[in-house]
Length: 302
Image 1 (tube, helix red, strand yellow):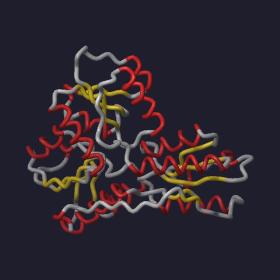
Image 2 (cartoon, one colour):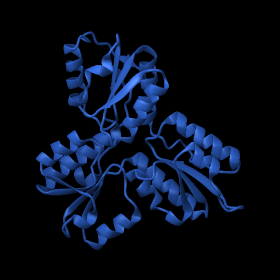
Image 3 (spheres, helix red, strand yellow):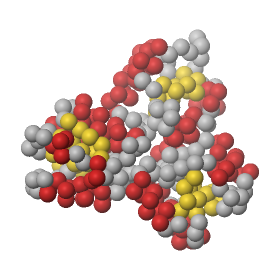
Image 4 (cartoon, one colour):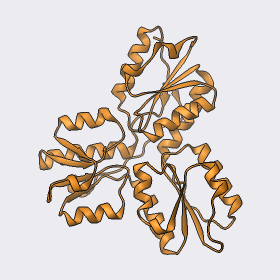
């Protein structure tokens, strides 16, 4: 079992903000998109009175509306203000950092090369800070083929939940092609994504199979599966124990278990219990590092 795994500081903060908002305001509290990308978390909060919507325009005027941990664009904020929504912003502080960088680079007249997945909510929000100045780069091939006007000042930013290794390759290509490109003061890929991927590499070095507990739409969880596969292990994503297929374990003497940054520990323990029933009863923890990051809630919820 990998350590660290599971909830990061931004996820704990976001979930806690929904829970606290329900305590203060009562039912219903509206949440724009999934607060974090995990259906189990969403279902538990729905039972407590949270209502999840795809758009702020679905929220009744004047109601409490929580923005998810993935962040939103200025357009969404403007829409919420027009509807007189009582906004509680649960954007992860590390995502907010990227938004601030986008505004700073755009204000300096730069063209921003945003490395990330076009359809991911986080990228949609960051892109929205400066859509006229931003080009999304999804792959190494995109970086190789990218055309930008000659003489443009360039900067790059990244989504916080990408593969560290793949993103490094993309940035290296951008720097090779555009030697004067500027990047953020500190890396945009967050500590949690980095730590969990490094822990997965260690699991893959010693285990035949690596199981990652996380949802299909969880970018950091999907990246962990890819990292395990790239480092020699067979690996699958398990939304929960019901997704486990015994055929995945064929021939495996040692199984690695970890979880994405939005996956609750209870889902990990249910998977471990099932693995015990299948003959993998001896457990040990492989500790890559210890995390102590904490993000406080805003004052109105304290």
